Image (cartoon, rainbow, N blue to C red):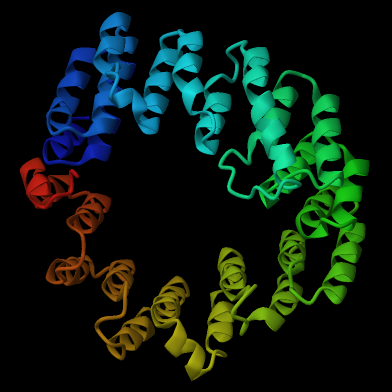
Length: 412
């Protein structure tokens, strides 16, 4: 705790937030507020809201609300309204929170905030009333060729609230009818419908979505539902059938994931291989991650090394830093360091990747020296390495102060 507080005093907001949270757990609210005070004085908005929240936890509800309450000018700010609405909900004033958000509900992200903040607050009917006209507007927009509606997520959210209110049949029926009639604007609505069906075990409707007009979204969900019901062979068969007929390679990744879960890694790699040199729908990076998670670092390196010079020139930083990382994961430290020395010094991430190799091989001082010598490396990266090796006091001394951060314009 004391180290967190010291780090906070040096300007580490994440440490200040963590320290305040831990202090609140032991009811040291005044000390928590003291940790946040320098950040509040700097005008750091997250600190202001965190301080107001601490006041609520301390039982000083009205003071906390007054602290966070925006003036009429600030109420025009969508972000301020969202933060204040959250504070009101925490204070138990849910209806007031809804009222603060209501003027801004033509914005999709604030419509989502309304749904999020009212979950479990016994206000589903009121939220549905507010969603209804927004959903109807999104429902009719496509037919009227109005493509710029921000709250295109209203139908998805309407179904979500119906579901949490226990009205699953109504949610499935309504959203399913909209999709069947083409009364929606964005692909996210298809995704929301597929997830709704999957959560509620609606396998028949999921099959209809998965193998029909919207297979590009629905098929992976249908295949996973089959797998979860002990029918992985059927899932594999339907995925391979669609892969064979699809020129866009949209169904390879769900099959790769399925094969990976079954431990059939080599087969999974071969499913992805035809895409490795594509500009679109390239699964190279995903397959590399799959092999890494399976501990098959040499196989991942072999695939990387199959790339030609043109590919490497097009993706230099990604290729080189991943190759260094894979060599390190494979325990081939000296080879990784030798490879790093052959690279141009301006490769993005080279210093950090090389320092990681040095650390992994036990050469911590060399890693620290390398990081400190690079002006582009953030001071927090050095501090993190020191902390990892039990040198927290030294890490504190290396951190920039709040004044330094302010001078560097990091406080906006």
